[in-house]
Length: 249
Image (spheres, rainbow, N blue to C red):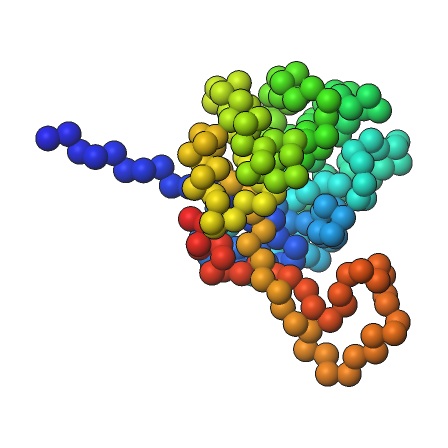
């Protein structure tokens, strides 16, 4: 009698906004984290302290670091490019497990010159090309360029607001990649739709935040003096929740 093959375990990457979120991601069973600062801006490079603390708190999870000097678009000035190179050097000095970055030209194509420079600086670490891909003008061409550059995986929502809506393109990218690069759906991936995305696209790695709202421990609250964007609540925050991580596996 032929034994039934063991199903391939779903690989989960958590978009972690703090060292504490990294700890929660590990406790929930995630394979790795993408550690970021400034999540409301789409994620920027975390601090030395955040990276080091995450490494101290965790023991088995892979810690990948986003290299992004600011929010907004993915067209970077010379000053910003130098910042990215310094941040890559910092992350490598800290011994992180991987890096995440992306870059575009004014015309919406992959900035091949800068990508090559960043990849050279990042070597030998694995690199994920992030959702800059989702605002490029020709995804099929861009995928081939990202593969040729040596990236290990591509994070994408299928050029849609969330991965569920992006299923048609994600499935097409998985077919086009044909195992040459990992296509990782992200944005809007949740416990209640991850199986649907998996079945429809053939993807095996997934990116999600799995966060829950946490209230501040502050008892005295002066709500008349905002410290930043007045639309962002200052007495609550979101952190990765180990139960939500486990529910996605």
